[in-house]
Length: 207
Image (cartoon, rainbow, N blue to C red):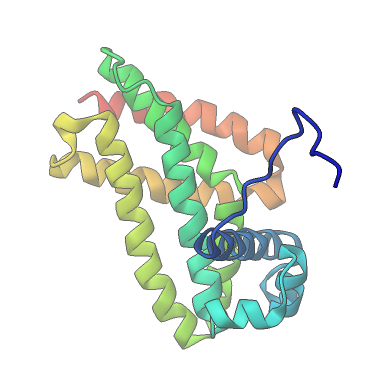
């Protein structure tokens, strides 16, 4: 029997739990991609499973209903984006205004990415779908709290400040409204408007 080649890489076999986690993550990422690229009206769970590279039976095993599947996809990506935002942030930044600006920029980044586009598709669909509307209300509270908690990591002294939470709530509402106009006005126009608005938000934050 031939001896194995010296120096050849050995591939570690993943555990069953790791394979399941990878399949689940692939499905959730694919769901967001399909919402963004195809829209809610054209989305099918079969297409999502194909994009994820898994069987539709696997998808149904993890997520029995379409509503559960899609809302969990938004939750999954939002949590990952929050972790990435904190990883980019300089938690030791001594300038409080600079930390406020970092929060605004990270929130704006999220509102210009796929998770917001996917969420917008579900918001629109929820207008005439009671089950989806109920799930989206719960998800909305969770994601908003996630953003507030992430902001609190950068500004721990203000995390429990009621006025700061109102400021962030108003900021999120403004960003959502502005981001919705991107499809009509175009990215460059919306980005210019954001850059004009941001100094005023920072001035409010500094009060």
